[in-house]
Length: 135
View 1 (cartoon, rainbow, N blue to C red):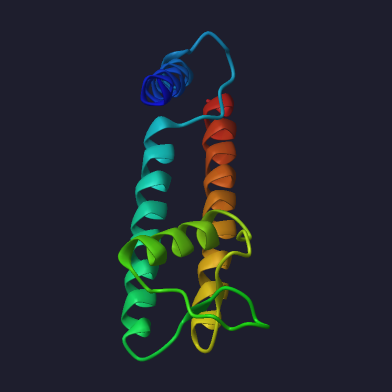
View 2 (tube, rainbow, N blue to C red; view 1 turned 45 degrees about the vertical axis):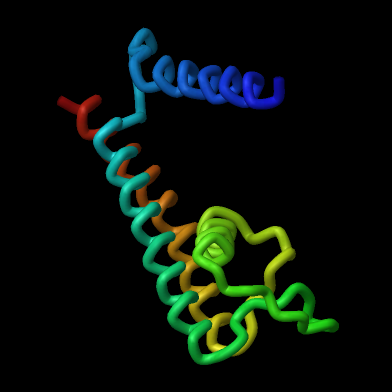
């Protein structure tokens, strides 16, 4: 039953995404599908790239801990470093994994990229919209 509900939920999300990308009934759209797909691709590759950096750093020692007080190491599996990279790139993080050592520097850089890339996307989308309104 749970699997069925998960499939239904995924289909619901997919239908809404398709509707969003194909509905052009509004007159002044600031949305650019090619620009969005480019942003999605770039963010995905940045996420994977930083996950690779975290994994390589883990070969030198502990890079993630559960808390700063216990400093209990988190196993640096591919899934864990992808998850940490994702939560660092697209949010402030949940606090369930904390970087230590030089990993902190890379996490800050990744967080900055996660804030600046979408901002640049919206600025570019607004610029494209303003240019098309002037023509």
